[in-house]
Length: 172
Image 1: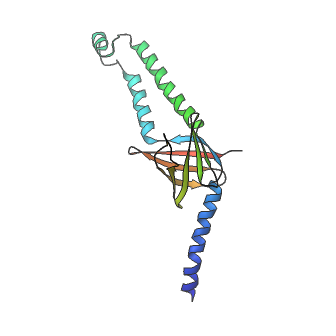
Image 2: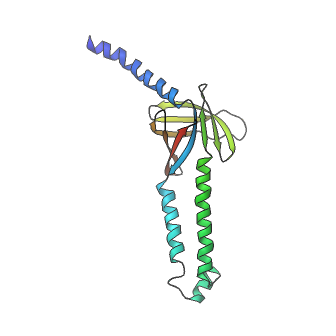
Image 3: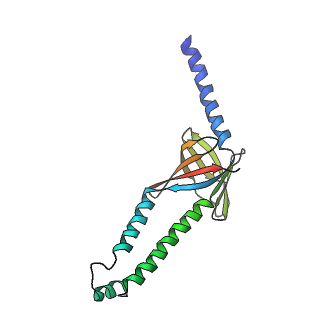
């Protein structure tokens, strides 16, 4: 008898959890942070290059390799470019907004550009965004739910073999 009750109650409990996640997800979320080991590694390598460029070469070699023998000016320009990439990346994150509507339409805004997609929960651990159709629609996107509650959401994105985690907070 207990087995029968358990078997009957389990699907109801799982359905209830999915409905609860759907209710928590159905709001407007603003991205606040991006974590990416790959991006961090690229930025670190860039900084190491800037810090060491021209240190082990003479003026003629620097002129040959970099088109200048003024390494201080080159380092300054490279640092400006690297800092600019960091600022652009932070700005892109801060301007990312996901609105998951109750009608299963997601309105996605990235740096002022907006698109809409159909969304659904794959399971307790995933969200799939599918094109609504039309010209210029995005491709299907699968995101992993790392955590989701009323105050924060963390989603994992995989693109071209790299993983990143974005933290979102609900609109106030």
